[in-house]
Length: 141
Ligand code: FES
Image (spheres, rainbow, N blue to C red):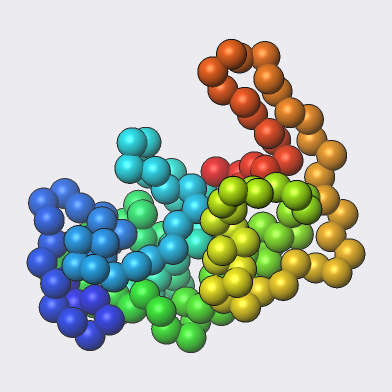
């Protein structure tokens, strides 16, 4: 596969995201987790693929040797900024005191939270002794 102008090997059955990571190229993600099936919900991992109109989520598109992929072109960067801006529109200050990937990406892509972000008032579900669910921190994956 040609990735940002460089020929890289495609591991068997790998997605574009997995191929890029194996080749040392970082594509940002929010909803992707290697232990879960790919969902393609957050759209932060969008990339350009020659011959295919629009942008495509790298985490769900299978890689193959014939693909020519751009992971950081101006249209990709613009789309990522838009997706991050949408995520920040629901951002509730105070979340992620230890690590917040959305804020990390916002800083990397120079996206500020909206001045009048309303924040969410969603509840926290602590009914399970092992899992705490803060719906206000949801990235809609
Ligand atoms: Fe690919 Fe979320 S990481 S869509």
